Amino acid sequence: MSVESLSTLLKQLEKEKRRLESQVRECALRLERESKAYRKVKDEHRMYLAKMSQLSDSPQSSKGQPVNLHRMKEDPVKIGRSNPANQKMVNAKRAFSTLT
Image (cartoon, rainbow, N blue to C red; front, side, top):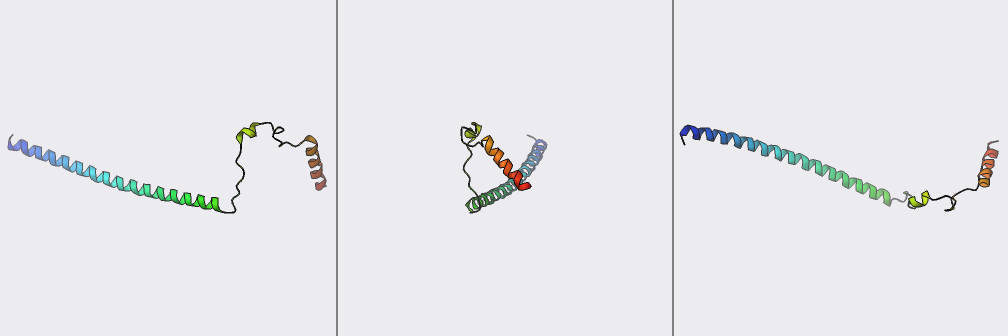
């Protein structure tokens, strides 16, 4: 190979080297940004879990019975959660009498 072709090849290789070094720097910066974002989200998640745990442990939180969706679809008379018509009327009369 001639000196000129070697010189041209050297310039091309140096240019490629600079491009690759720049790409490595960009990847390193991106990795650093993403790791900071990950740590931030992880800390927020940890704080959220601690707050949820604190709320669930507090005596003020009421823990009702879990809702049984299958029973909700059943007829209210069958599961004993219906008011007979006459009881509704009694409650209506009582409410009306307190208003007057």
